[in-house]
Length: 443
Picture 1 (cartoon, rainbow, N blue to C red):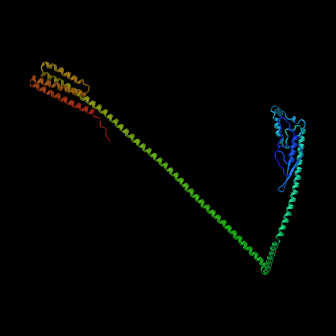
Picture 2: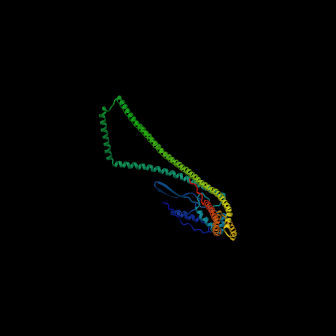
Picture 3: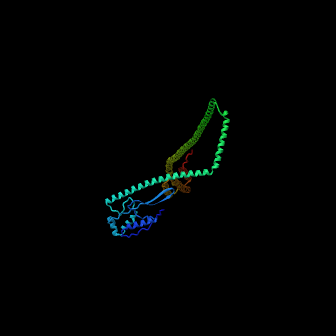
């Protein structure tokens, strides 16, 4: 009988109605009789009940359902905790929650509807131990039955195989017998051939030993040859590896040499560039120093020449001023010495009234000429005064005095004019020399 496990309808329980386990048990029994096991059915404290067994793939599959429910003790519903009562009283849903959890309680766990007394716990442990012992006993018996079943199946399979092979052999017995006869004939012919050739194939002991020795020698030579070939191959491989390693070492050395040479050349080139740059910088500094020193010396020489020229000009100016002062003093003395002579000549040549006015006019002219600030202006003024006064005196003397007086008057203007001309020329030369800039000597 196959077991059809389907969820059966669970009885609806209200929030304030106690669960009716008798109704649940009745429905479970009806479901089992109908071949349907309800999955919501709670675990019952009872012995294991075997619902059905089904033969599949040569082994026994036992489907057992062990169910238990909380015992219907009087006042069981009143043993709930204070929290559950409080929740039930406040919300009306606490008892319903416990009803929903109760059917799915495990076998060895304590049901939330069970009382919490120690006696009940001991009873529950005892019942669980009994259930476990019964389960172990059942599994042992089941294992033994399965072993017996396997032995029977093995024996039956062997018998079936023997019968099958016998049937097949009997069915093809003629072909098998013919093949067997052919093999026997071939073997007989081979034995006859070997018996006919026996004298030639049988060897003496010495020949056998010699043959074995030659075979051993040939085998040894073959082994030695193979070993020598192997050793030679290994030696050649080692030599090739050594040669390859040597070539690689030389190549690495050459590469390292080239790399180091390139690095050294780069370093030398960098050092050479730094040295050249330092030499150029040093040469530039030396050139700058030389040029600055040359420029400084040129500036110093120019400054010195300017200072020498200025000092020479000052010295020349002072000396020329001194010479001019000396000449002016000499000219003044000459004029002072010539003034009485002029006055005498004019007085002798002019009438009494003009003679009386002449000294005053000459003195006024000389005084005005000497009042000039510079030496050049004074000399020019004296010359102009003399040139302006003396012709008048000479003209008057020529008209009023005899020839002797006229000759004397004529000589006096010449003397005065010569003295004035020389003084004026000398003063002009001194002024030109003082005004001319000093020429700087060139090197």
